[in-house]
Image 1 (cartoon, rainbow, N blue to C red):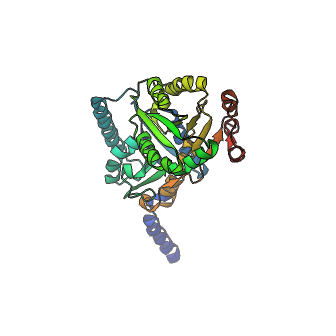
Image 2: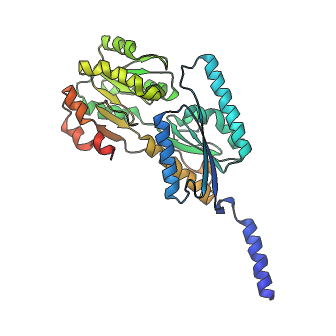
Image 3: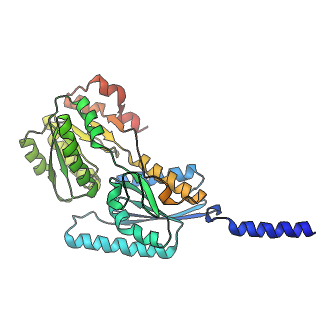
Length: 339
């Protein structure tokens, strides 16, 4: 009897010491700005990875997703409104006391994470192109209370592949909006592509503007191809801006190279990270935090190491462009990527 009593006391004491990650159910809140397909892909990758780690939505996982509308062109007052909405939603989420918050994209991460961290809620971000822009110490080193997965891709790697595909390319045009990710990529690309003999010419447009005038201006300056950066501008309105750009480039047999793959069609070559995979990397981090009690700041910021390279064979045929065998050997077809 005495042994049984001692065993019971020890069991109670040990149970009181067990960390929070021994729980059977989990609660996650998700915050993002803009309802766009790439963010849907990142979110789905996150959910799928959690399921692989036995954290299943509708079973032992409750997850709420909040999307702040930012589809319209953002004037200074619109931007202030979006910022206030982010902070207001962050306060609501803090009051709900979730086990973890996933932030998707740069604005949602940058302007909400501090409230969550101050409340002791772990934060994991995804679909952020420049980790330092959201407060990380470096490209791979997170900050106190948060970590995540980045879309960052060294433009040098991307332009080496681009040069392999188009040896005679000397001028590339990029039409982009004021999207943080797009600006960061374009500025770095302008510096690094020059070392490979490629001059990058860019033109910024408003998110509700057509890309046609900007594209015509760049064509007038002699660009031989267009690059598509990670930019919410192209994903808004069901890829309307991209379709408008392609209406100009296709008729002139000008190739379009996308520096990410998000499911749209019409580009000749796709080089970069996949949103679904980046989301899954964040899911892997979240699983460690939830199930093992790992501190977010101990997990390095992660990225897709091997770039995805896809070629659209139908577009290649339509444009009458033959890509070198060196590219065709290492690239997958867009068709195969859909399977």
